[in-house]
Amino acid sequence: METMIQIKDVTKTFIGKDNTVEALKGINLEIHRGEIYGIIGMSGAGKSTLVRCLNFLERPSSGTVLVEGKDLSTLRDSELRKMRTRIAMIFQHFNLLMQRTVIDNVCFPMEIIKMPKKDALARAKELLGIVGLSEKEQAYPAQLSGGQKQRVAIARALATNPQILLCDEATSALDPTTTKAILALLKEINEKYGITIVIITHEMSVVQEICTHVAIIDEGNLAETGRVEEVFQRPRSKAAKKLVFQGEREQYEEMKGKRCIRIVFTSNSSFEPVIGNMVLACKVPVNILLADTRDIGGVAHGQMILQLPEDNAVAEKMIRYLRDRKLEVEELNNYVG
Ligand SMILES: Nc1ncnc2c1ncn2[C@@H]1O[C@H](COP(=O)(O)OP(=O)(O)OP(=O)(O)O)[C@@H](O)[C@H]1O
Image: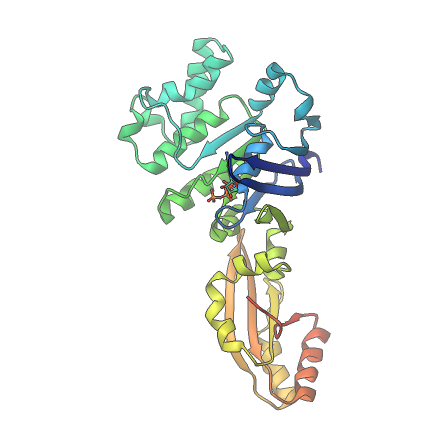
C-alpha cells in the first residue's frame, strides 16, 4: 500500500529560559493511504507536537517527515504552502471565523488559493451538503451547536481536496452522541473519498470506534503501534496495557496473587463451549473474573479472564487444553498495572 506519511527518528525539544522539554524523543511511524490512524496517549505525551510536525506547523529538532514521498524540510515556503493544502486539519475548538457566515468560512481556504468566487461557492455548497449542513449556509458560527461547528470545520478542511486530514482532539469538546455522529462522518469521508485520516486523541473509545491502526505515545516515545484489534487484544507495552485496561483495574486488583489467564477470541471463534468442555475434561471448576465483548470497527472481539485452580498440574492442563483449541492464552500473573 502507498505510504502517505513517513516519520523517521523525529525529535522535538523545546528549549525554554529555565527548562528544556524533550516532547518527542525519536519517533518512527508510517501511515498508508486510506488508513484511519489513531495517535493516542496521556496528557503531555507529545501527541499535539507530533501532529504539528506532520505539516511542519512545528519543525522537528531532528529527523525527517516525508509526505507523499516529499521531505518537508527540503521544500521552499511556497512549496510548503502548497503541500499544506493537501494536509488539512481540524481542531478541538473548531477555529471558525466568527464574523463570517458558514458558507464564507468554507470558502475561505479557496479564497487563499485564489479560486474564482463562483467555483468556490459551488464547491462550498457541495461540501455543506456532504457534511449535512446545507440549511445553515447563512448562519454564523455563534448560532451553531458544537457538532455543527465541527461539521463546518470539516467542510472547510475538505475545500482544497486534501489527501490527508489531521484531527487534533476533534471530538473532545463534544458530548458522546455528537462524538459518534462526527466520527461516523469522518469514516464516511475516508471511505467515499479515500482520504487518509490521522486522529489525535486521549480517548480509547475514539480509536476503537473508527481507527484501523493505532500508535501509542508515552512520554515522547512510541510505545506500540499496530492494527487496532491487535493492540486491543494483545497490548504488549505498559502504556498500551494502561490504556486498554483503563476500566479493568479493579479486576486486576482482585487477581493479585492468583493464577489468572486472559483468553482472546474474535467473532469467528466462540469460546463458551470450549470453557465448558475444558471444565468437564479437567473436572475442576474455574472462576470467571471477567468476560467482555467489544465492538472494534464493527467486529465483535472478546476476552475472558479466568482464575485457574491452585493445583499447578491442573492449571497447566487447562492452558494446554485451550491452546490446543487455538485460543490465545496469556498468563497474567506478572501484570503490574
Ligand atoms: N511550544 C512549546 N514550548 C515548550 N514546551 C512545549 C511546547 N509545546 C509543547 N510543549 C511541551 O511538550 C510536551 C508535550 O506536549 P503536547 O502538547 O505535544 O502533549 P499532548 O500529548 O498533546 O498533551 P495534551 O493531550 O495535554 O494536549 C509537554 O510537556 C508540553 O508542556
